[in-house]
Length: 294
Length: 65
Image (cartoon, rainbow over all chains, first blue to last red; front, top):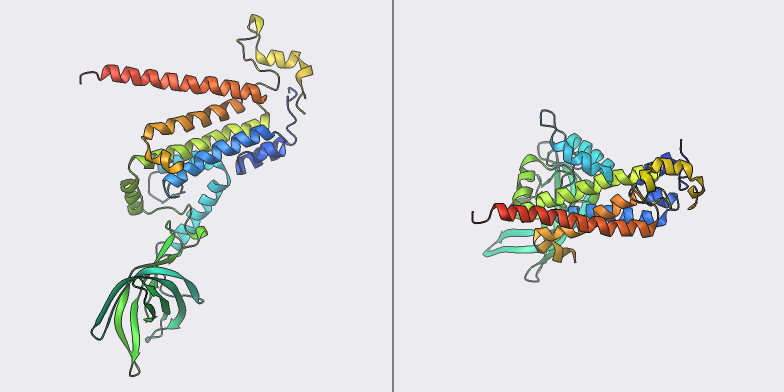
């Protein structure tokens, strides 16, 4: 085996690091220039592709009975390392949790809130955008089934402060889904002479979904079609950027593992070599070039 | 800058893409920074020329269509 022209340290560790985070393997080997090139180029391409698609282009969707061709783009994207592994895990979480709305909670949940309320109180009709906070708590319904109740407080678009109680049967969107907002569906009620009376409902209401519960989560078929419609040709562009980023990292991983194709100081292929000698011959015949950078 | 690029004609995306591909490809082949940069410029120009040539052929083929 030829001597490497650079000090690769432990090539396996370097390759693993280079796969996980582009440039990290080269940083480990002390090849700072290359670490900068790989990390900036690969992560920029990948990040730009994600940004173009609002983070929705990157997903591991493997459904039984569906064609596996959809996985090909993911295989290319997966070359970028940690995000690929994260996406595989998100795909598994999505399949486990399914597309079920949440109609019961194990513990109270409080969050910021935005949406629209429609309330009728006496002669007053309110239909306004609202922002504020919403608190959900687990409860037992009138038939003994677990349900969710809550309270929403905040400010209407006209500046009026409001505080409403949410009825039993409040529902939340799926916990894991590819959207940074989680839908809330609830009726608004108030106590009147010891009775609970429905006075309105929340519309287009949502709470933020945590990054871990939406990023790289697979889109459903209809969501994917909506994304195509929304992005048009930028869907393919985003896909190309993220796929090329992943494929370029394969070159970076191999460079971390085996060094460059033409080593330090051996900066010609065959065009500058008298008599057309092969590079491998030069590498073997010029051991003084070995370690020049180490 | 990202917004400007995204709003521009889609063809402009070729430039950063070609730069990144040239840089990474040549980084995987050479070790000396000067050589990497020199070869990157060469490859970048080559990519643009080849794509320009293809564009020229397509324009010629579709002339008066």
